Image (tube, rainbow, N blue to C red):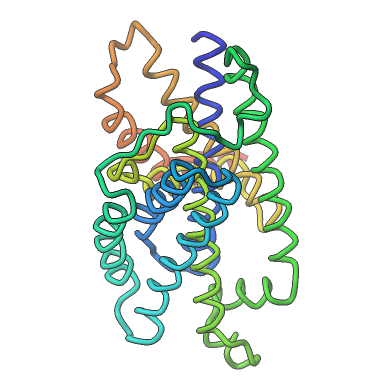
Amino acid sequence: MTPIALMGALEIGLIFALVALGVLISFRILDFPDLTADGSFPLGGAVAATLIAGGHDPWLACGFGALAGAVSGLVTAWLHVRLNILQLLASILVMIALYSINLRIMGAPNMPLIGSPTVFAPFIGEALENSWLVQPAVLAVIIVAAKIALDLFFASQTGLAMRATGANPRMARAQGVATERMVLSGMALSNALIALAGALYVQTQGGADVSMGVGTIVVGLAAVIIGETLLPSRKLWVITLATIIGALLYRLLIAVALNADFIGLQAQDLNLITALLVGFALVLPKLKAKFSRKAGGKH
């Protein structure tokens, strides 16, 4: 694998680390099975691409993209909390609706951004010769900032209340926690991060596409599971770190598989590789536990 290909995989891995952090909030912290990600990821990209193409500041576009994602997560949570629709079904309804909304926002199935300003533009030379180094570096700074912000938030009183809501909602209510509000806030935060990832993704890829969110939730879950298996811990700062590492490792494994000539895989095999890696990630914790029991039995 060439250094440029390696940095490209790292770049996509950093973007999906934001997705994984969002999935961590919904699936692990709130215990809310949420498929909204497949709609909020392209939603963030659609909003950002439309604003950038209209001449607005790229950072402002990212902010509005994240805000749109927060609204989508809020709607999913509201359907469950207020209308008592099953969590999974509520997220599917919002995900389906977002496909049409994304088309409305862009006005077409895709929107090119070639030549448009991006958040990376101020750091890239005129000949674009250093873009393959600059983009991962900028993304790394954003990921570190997001991780620190999440760690501080979940160490606060509100963050602890949100964690208690996911762990044991009945006990949390008995302690005076407004669990419904925590679910609404947590789902908004989760999908804001995912939509922000979509807003950054379209700027690295040179355009937005209405179907670019397919499989987003699968990638996020795989990253979370891989991270948990590699770095099992109850400390939240370790959990968020493990999630980021899981996302990076996941994308690197895909890049290695696609660039290994002896395997014979091509770009159209991406979904197959994704399915295999996710299946392996799901089985990995059980294999690890099995080997641990065997090792303990020998002693």
